[in-house]
Image (tube, rainbow, N blue to C red):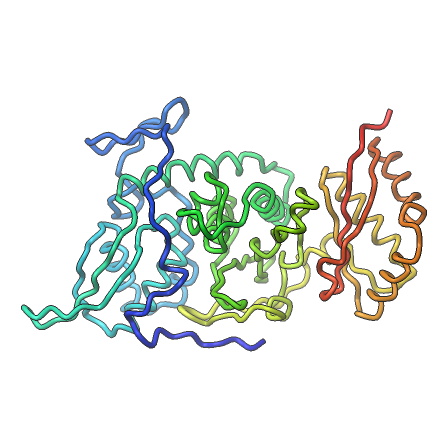
Length: 407
């Protein structure tokens, strides 16, 4: 698919992704005091105040800004407008005089939605004519108070730091990204109904999110891990949001939402993690994603070195190497106590041929030698099954069931 320009033709039209849900449920253990001091009970986050790294009226944790695009692709005038809008919505101003074209204003506001991960408060905006002074004004509606945003951000910060603390010094950036990707897939369910599903708080604390929540949480974790990234919007039949990360000088797409199995597959295999959209090129993502070049055109993604199937050595180029590649993928997964592994075939014909053979033969007979070597190498008894959930992309997914520790 080709990239599509996406412009706000009518300013008063509200983007589906921007218009979130309403609610004011905040964690009970966070106590908010009238003097502006935030205290979290029984942990190290005691003593938060409204003093921020920004001019917002609420607490903005370090790392909740992903500003690669605004730093590198905005003019000085656009950066000035960016900062002004950031201050306006950060202080929850309800009416703001429009001093630039509505299309310019809408574009910068949308960029702020991509980058300012702590700013979850805008519910709606409209364009209004002020007859008294003959000017147009933006009228904002907010869904959270400053205190509620602070409380959500404090909870999100704690959850994120707990996750980051599980990264180890021997991990390279690819391994860190895979860990963060897998954590979100395994610990957050897909929800469009939850009132916080478009926020980091929804993803990491309530553990219910839609694509915007997934993308913002992943971006925040990448920031804390020191990995350059941007958030991308596009179309997949509905408006959609995902991530791009920079590794080894190359950009890659990561769509955590689409690597979370659908309800049917998750019900059957609750511990499965998919990697079809982990560290992929433009050409792969564009199989079923339209990439918008709005509000700023994202980087090009052409690198292959850090692609999951290349990095894990799970590309199948011939029928003769199928079992060896499968064993490599399964062994690697078992070494990390993972419940699934994936291999990708070079051609459709090869995929069809191999999977047809699998269906015609006893799976246990084919995979007995692999299971035996797993037992010998790791002391673990496993059974194997497979699914062609991503068969249209020439991918075979193995389900690994750990029966018991071998004696």
